[in-house]
Length: 333
Image (cartoon, rainbow, N blue to C red; front, side, top):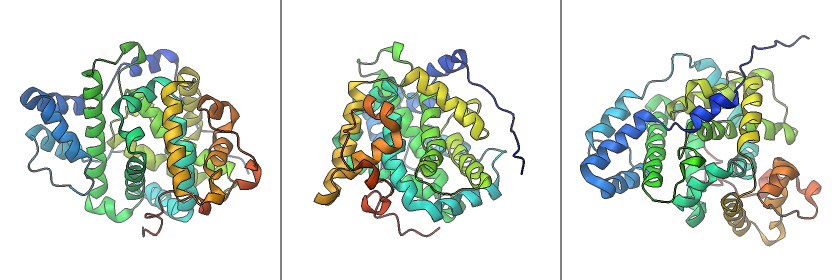
């Protein structure tokens, strides 16, 4: 049977270089309003509220925050409810494997982008409390794959809070005295697009590596679903791949431009590995590194200094052996 060949955009260096110097103007304007009125302490207070996933009431927040949460709560006009349903069902079916891939592939894959990893390193949020940050990431991913949370508005509200959190981190990074604009704008559009790919296209690639059978419709639906959340997170629509072919080209372009060995990327990866190892039984301490190296491949794993552990091939595919997002795996769609 012939497969449909989708038209594909390319992502030239000139385009990505422009987006590397761009943040998220609407969200950045909100943080600027808070900073103008309340200074650094006000931005810090807002960041604490944004990081509290149990708190959704924004009525006590700055008017600019309230207005942002209201005006940006609409889905893009290209959002397809049928594709989103397919994606959520797909996630439900493969959530254990996807959890493994998120922890052992998607997250460290982001750390391979050396300049983007600097923001995470400077913020200290991940390296100082890796488990908490990991749990927050898991809660958000499971929420965006829960239909009821979309229907109640919880997913949209939580995602917009994450978007403002990124803007607050961007503000602190720019005002911290350590940032070099040669690295790009902190939490810039190119890095945001790369993260979006890590949660969509890279997950699909990880499932293929693990031997999971998927239909074309399921893969395209999953990509579409994450693109909808990427839109809510402020990723420029021009950097949201419309199909797997475009995702391939965008991933290749960003990796070629940004992936290299760095102290920050290796440090973040080490923190992640140490967290997984502490959660693993003694007999499975090598499993996180083995899974990371399997999914990442030797070239990227070497950039991140992932240990080459013995018995790697025999360990691959033992998703249930790794305690990644254990509290969330019993959720209902």
